Amino acid sequence: QERISRKARQDRGSNHSITIKEEVMNRTMNLHGMMLSAVMGMALLMSGIAQADTLSQGHRNVSGVVTAVKGDIVTVKTSTGTLTLTQKGAAEHGHAEYKNGDEVTLMMDENNNIIEAHHKGEEGNHHFYTGKLIYMGKTQKEIKLETIDGEKVFPLSRLEIKTKPIEEGEIVTVEVNEGGIVIDLHRGAHGEVKH
Image (cartoon, rainbow, N blue to C red; front, side):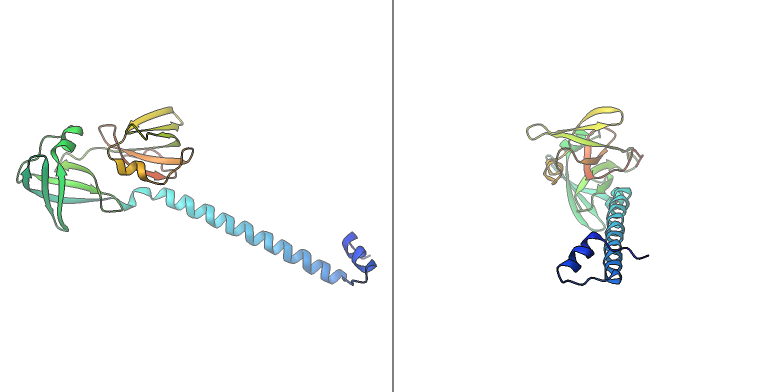
């Protein structure tokens, strides 16, 4: 016994002839469209998860030697070129002042910005905290996250972190150095891992 949908019966009544075969084909095409949409949605979700698992892969360490110290400005020669640091930055992170000839390790982000500097052999342990961004201070250099352990507030090391286009309420991961200061911020989850 063949069934004809109400739409097919209505269409037949108005001199449009839709056969059972055409109706089945329409339903099949709709089903295929929904399945394709579901697969594409899953692919997009999975690509976001994969990205979140590899947040710190853009970071790298570069070794160098201090070649000049002029006031607060410290010049470091590396295999890729000459970079500058500040004595103030060393003091803020609890490191000794740099002197000519000191060997240093620089942590670079994915944009080749120095996000951390240490005297060689004094590299610290960094931690990652993931949570919902509650507040990123416009007037104060700090960030507040809602984590599984409650709300946490961290000071920011540099203003560029505040200019990233991340909205309050988004899930973010912050990288915190051994001094408890945020040195990098990324959208997405990472978990707390020693770096």
